Image 1 (cartoon, rainbow, N blue to C red):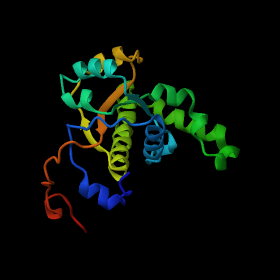
Image 2 (cartoon, rainbow, N blue to C red):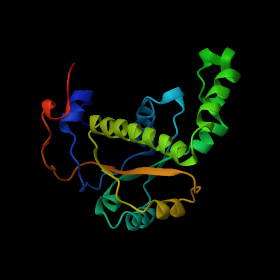
Image 3 (spheres, helix red, strand yellow):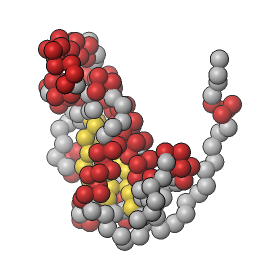
Length: 201
């Protein structure tokens, strides 16, 4: 097992990797990685992300079809389907309210529901989708810190993915993430310098 990396080390070493060894990954490891990624920040602590970890080869093959044949989906030890469900969140919003706020649970739940009631259905579900990308970033960094390589994918047919996993029509599918032990080095980082995208005022 590789030595666990710091956040900075993981960010520096992470590459988009599409070829993996045949080393399997245990359910316990998957649960640990996803649990850590679930510490990602979320407004009102709503945590709208939902995860399907796909290890079964036949299911990965079907998922690869939905991802336009991207080979990393099938080659991975596990491919994560990240989806978001704001309907479920709002139906069960009390479950996300911190125990330290239980004396204000009803008031807080009403405030949250009232806020989202003002949004269009489109904006509501895309708000949740945005939180899925935050989760995705945490998942890929945590995977890298444990010596696993990842490939995040936005290129797939979301309706095919929903049908494959019998997901409700209203959910959003922000991304797929393939993961496994790397069998290639990948390209080195080629990124903008700070001044190209940042400003301090």
